[in-house]
Image 1 (spheres, one colour):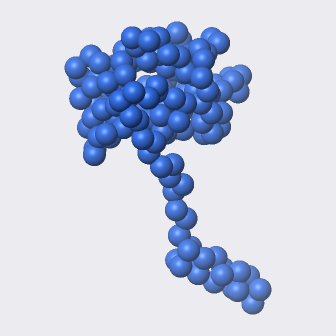
Image 2 (image 1 turned 135 degrees about the vertical axis):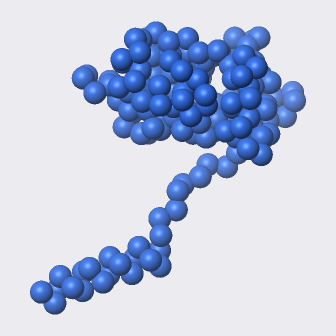
Length: 155
């Protein structure tokens, strides 16, 4: 019984004096003459809350998103597997959704002081386009529709 009490006290002390910190990734700089890179798309995806999109509940397949930056048609793919985001250059094979936006979208999101407000504003001005390749039920089961709703969009 004493051992159990000591363990509980230790756990309490750890949570009070050493609270967990959310790991943050520094915002990458983007110069006017610099191409958009994986680090920029990865940072934006994390800020959007992409880690909340889950694997397919039926098959376990990870979520796959393709990002297209116009007008240069730069393509990136984001795989979200059990909350772990992996971003790479190049198009995605069989994505769930494709998000299309111009360079100015990435620039505005990187420079915004209020990321969520900037994302909602860009969406309301039709600067961001989303193409869904799966049905609403599928998107809902994986958490896409909840993510869209955060920014005022419906599936």
